Image 1: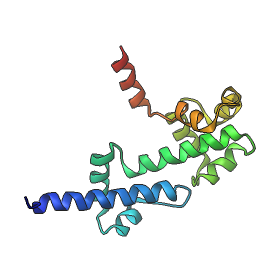
Image 2: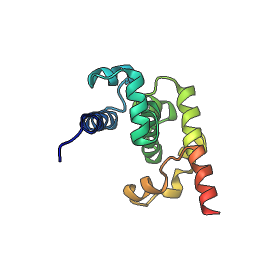
Image 3: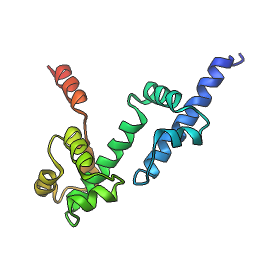
Image 4: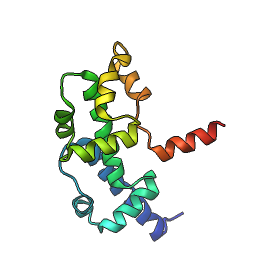
Length: 148
């Protein structure tokens, strides 16, 4: 059996999307934008966004922010950095936007999360990361309905 041009193109796009996702995972603290990510894989920003959402269920920007918030959670649990220092360490340039997105994904503001981080003290970081993984509000609502 030979591959059709459409299936070949789809496989190529999936490989490119994986490269974009891997770059976001590696360089989450760097200034990244969809246009720049798209340029690196020779796609338009709109095409990249549509294909990324189809493959991973969220936009490249949402994926980036989730990675940043996950890292921020780890830094806040460590307790040796202020919320502002954590904000800039994970690549956010606005404390207000960082706090809003953190609260949206985690359910509490970063300052409250940092204060309450003693709850996970003593738990191995790999377990704490899994237990405290950020979940979007809409996903949490979906999870609640599924459990009912």
